[in-house]
Image (cartoon, rainbow, N blue to C red; front, top):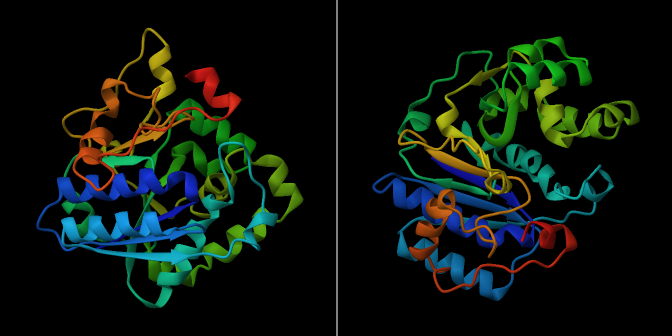
Length: 283
């Protein structure tokens, strides 16, 4: 079962620990990990090799030349690395029938057997998890002029891709074309996530929230926060600017990340201190 990540250098630490968390929670499963990145030094190589050895698993690293992607829209929180998911889908087009794409700020705390066993219906290009509720879906459907989104708008940090259908429908190419269209760019706020929602409307299967339980550590700054992570949760997705590898992100919900970190070659790495003014604000 193939699991892929698309990251820049700021997410290598998170990605290594995310892989460790999947392996910790899923011993005995035949898994292979694929890391698409534009930066990888000898220290990263040593750690990822040690991780593969520690868990007797396969990790393949692909170095990406990003020049062509840099012309696409980006924001403070979303760099061009967000577009690596298109490269991933295209890379596997003739190699396998499904790939699980995960953001690197996801920690695993449960079995993924259900995903391994999932059978797609014939028109389903991907399995995804909703973001927000009806009110948010309705807003997105209006902003993106796509009425079908009222029945669900998904978060693109978790996508189980049905490769043959994704390829047949030319999703990656269509998405990149849309991201170059000034009219589309004017409408979108969530870059490729918005575009994928438009392209996959009525063609994606919505699976249980336990597979992408989204929680921002910045919510912890509020008094009345409800933690959505429970015993059933499989993937905890640390959305928002503060990540569990940040020194100021040590909240109870970060435990799933920190536990995997302590069972990985990153166990002795210090958590990262704030570097930007944006981060200092939350720290």
